[in-house]
Image (cartoon, rainbow, N blue to C red):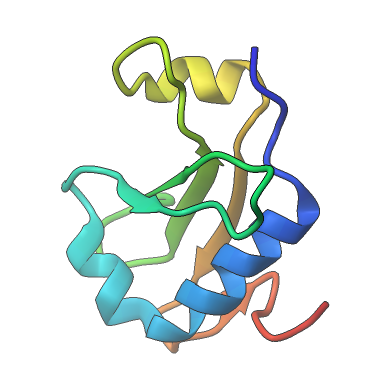
Length: 102
């Protein structure tokens, strides 16, 4: 099993894609995963997928995890393997945790 997403990689995704805002992540819901090159040479690509946290039109939850090399995208196994990290995007554009912080 792959290691979970490192703090540095998670922060890279949050700081790079968090500022894109609510409208951006809303358009990603229901699509395929966003493929993100690993920010460091030693890391593989990452995936990000956005879903409604509780109800459509509300808070969006974005999951970030390493790409699995041996099988098709399997969202449930990533979560069960505790490899995913996540952040929330609110309708007013804020994220939790906030982007831009180290």
